[in-house]
Structures are given as structure tokens and as C-alpha cells.
Length: 303
Image (tube, rainbow, N blue to C red; front, side):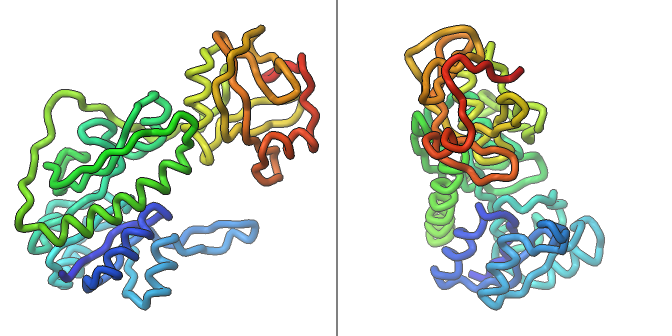
């Protein structure tokens, strides 16, 4: 098929690779424009932009698709279908209608649960036992379109958003190739009206750990916000990101370190920190981290 691919972050890259490997013709790749990054604040292309260039594909990064010029340029590609995954711009109706078979979205949740911007983070933070990928026929509403295919996967008890992100990205790549190969045989399944939840964009204000909450909540927060933006706490004058945790069978005053293995008491129960990061340093496993910053038993966190 002749495809317009629309995606921006790392999550989208395996999908682009899978479409190319399956023999589809990529008419053009749409992504977000390069933005200043790094210490020099030089414009850096997005992961999809960089991958598309490596594949010698045409890249377009309009700031908006609402202008007549942008919509005409999109329609002139005469695509059979558009594949959209974490693109970052709203698609106007004229864009949705331009390809012969419309636009398909790869969404990282089991719709209608977790429509919106941060479905992977929210699934872990809510304690969902499973999640998955939906291939959805796009319409004007926010992730409201009928689902053509879906695949489910359990969420591991210690899995972080970063780990689940990578698994779902590969699942999405496999599922879209399957969807395109059987498109004429797929029946759109309207989403049920019940069970709708919205995955609001992560606010950095959510990232500070409140040790008076239960261990289950703190563990979900740490894993759900890892690696970005990273749940954090203060250890003395050091602001430390907590990037991995497990539940522990200990208890004590909330925020108190209970042993030499970085187990911390919560309002109910405790968590053991398995990965952490000091400001200006790389992420480290607990054993390595504690060699650089002593956190002895009895230390109070968050003060």
C-alpha cells in the first residue's frame, strides 16, 4: 500500500521500520519539527525524523495541518492510507478524509480505557493488570474511533513505563502490519460507551513522592513515572529520582529508611528502591547508587 506515516518519538520508530520491511511504499513521513536540545540548544531532529532520513524517505514537519496549503500538500500524496502513532498534532477532518482508506491510529491502551496523551504511564499508575494495543480508525474525536484490531498483554509487577513502552511499541509494529494485510476483512468495532477513561498528560507536579501514601501507591508512582519525568524525593540536600521499586514486607514511620538496602517506609507498608539517579548523574542500580551516596538506616526522606 502507499502509506503516509505520521509519528514523532522513539515509540513510533519500530512501526516505521515494520512498514518498510513489509514492503509498503512510504509516500512521506510526517513528524514534529526539530527542537532545541542538549547543552548547545541546537535544533535536534525527532527520532522518527532521524530514522526516516536514514531510510532516505521524504520528511515533512508542518507546524499545523489546519491550513489549506498543508491539507492540499497532504492530499496530493494520493495515499491509500495514513498510519498515525504518537504524532503530536490534531488531524483536521480534511486530513482524515484524504487517504483512500482514511487514517489508522496505533494506540497504546485497551480502548476506551486511557484515551489521550499518556496511556502507558496512567495504566501503571492506576495499577492496571493488563494493557495492550488498539488499531483504531481515526475520527474527529479524541481516540473515539472504532477499533479494527486489538492485542493484550499483562503488566509485570515490577515493570516500569519505559519497559512497557518498548514492549508495546513492538506489539504495535506487528499489529499494524497484520491490520494492513487483512484490511478488507476487518470489521470496525465501535468503542463501548462505558469504561471510558482519559490519560491526561503527566504533570511534573505529580512526580514528588508523598511517603504518607500507601506502598502500593508509591510503587505505582515510581514505576509509572520511570524513566520520565521520574518520581523524586529529597535525601538531605540531594534531589534524587527513584526509577524502580518493589513492594517490601516492612513498616515504620513514613519516609524512614528501614535497612541498608534502601527500603523506605510508607504510610502503609514499604518499598525497596532498586534504581535511582542523583542530579547530574546517570541512573544506577541501588548497590552502585549507595556507594556514591550513603543512605543509612534511619534516614528520613523528603524533608
